[in-house]
Length: 88
Image 1 (tube, rainbow, N blue to C red):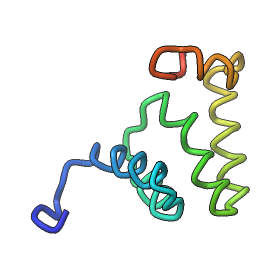
Image 2 (cartoon, rainbow, N blue to C red; image 1 turned 180 degrees about the vertical axis):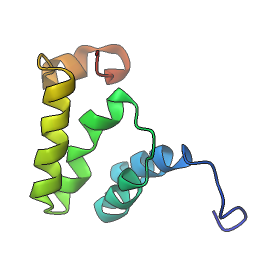
Image 3 (cartoon, rainbow, N blue to C red; image 1 turned 90 degrees about the vertical axis):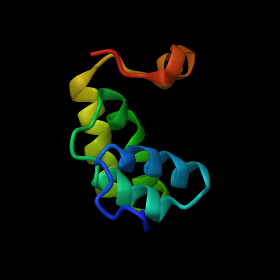
Image 4 (tube, rainbow, N blue to C red; image 1 turned 120 degrees about the vertical axis):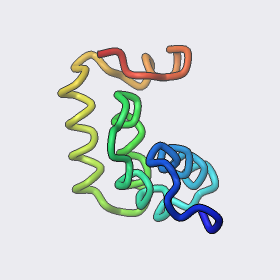
């Protein structure tokens, strides 16, 4: 990022994951909000850093988007599905 401050937008998805799994939920949430063209799977991941930082409003909004996109989504489906992606 220091070498290329105009990095491609999709980098934000990788930063979001990296910071989330490093326990830096505030940074994960920051980069989640910068994802400009989210994939379906981005919606099922978005509530996590929001909830971990106490941003319950954003967490609920992201969870509602998951339910809207796939009313049959469940944690069990996510964990058993290869890659955990939402099926829309």
